[in-house]
Image (cartoon, rainbow, N blue to C red; front, top):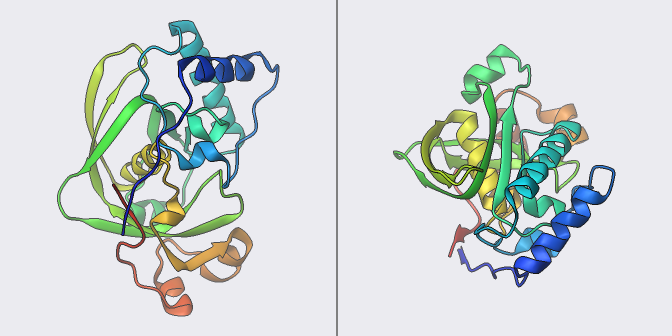
Length: 226
């Protein structure tokens, strides 16, 4: 099913005011949860709504929130800011067998603006995936196992970079956020589990046990971007 996502109605002044409130709060902002409108709108393209200092400060706050959560990525809409900005970083110590199966390697900190990804090749990988804006849940999502990401760096330079394995999954997940898409939109919904039930029944590097026990396939599901 192809889904058309409405664009944000927030203009530059509103975005700037929201960012200023976040930066002046004196504490880390909360991560908004599913149902917040910023998560279901196409975020505004970054085109200078923030000064260089504001942008750098916001990126710093987002990195702190990501670490505190903890997570491997955070998009501005997850703080209620409808702007095409995300931060990514994966430095977790992962079981070697799980890391090998998931093709998971460390990802150095990266801030991306106006990202767009395209699949590289036809390979698809299916694994459980969670989200800081859907606390306590996870589900199996099939995603391209390699993508080419085009984006702007915080200093305004255009960049292109290929990602594969778990890094490609992180890139797609966060870029989807900027387009009003949550991972459950692409998930095999019969795989949906609370973290506690996943840990009790389905925790393993792959998804074979869950696929058999919950009765889902591991192919693409849900919506595509329209």
